Structures are given as C-alpha cells and as structure tokens.
Length: 94
Image (cartoon, rainbow, N blue to C red; front, side, top):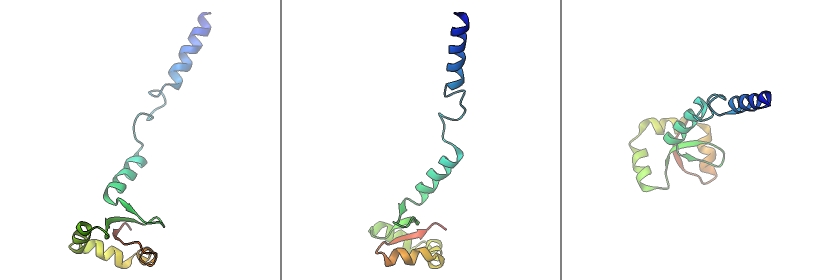
C-alpha cells in the first residue's frame, strides 16, 4: 500500500505545472509575439502586420508624420498587394 501511495505522489509531482517547467509563464516566443501584436495591431488578409489602420482618421494622421512607416511601406511589396485587395494598413512590419 505504501508503494502505491508513493507512486501516486511521484506521478502528481512529475505532472504538476511547476515540475513541467514554464507552463504557468509565457514562453519567450509568446512574449515576442505579444509585443509584435502590440506594436503592429492590424493584420491584413494575407498576413501583413501594420502599425496603423489608415481607415481611421487618427491613425492616418499619425502615419502621415511617421517617415519610417512610410519608408517601410514603400519598399514592402506586400503593401501594394494589400492595397489592391482594398486593405489600407500603414507602417508595415518588415
């Protein structure tokens, strides 16, 4: 009987979240993805991430004074594909 109890306790310890490592915490990849989603919250249907949604007047104003965002859009070929599809994000993530 003591062996059975010991085996059950060992099984519980081994399978507990604390023993499993980082189950209670975000992985570094999840953290990185969350930060990217925070900085580039808009995503087109083909997956391009954008800092600004140019259909929103406030985002459009911020985009107009962000030369880095405009430069990224001018050299990212996915931006033109999105615009051809009627999607208008600004400040693409490269």
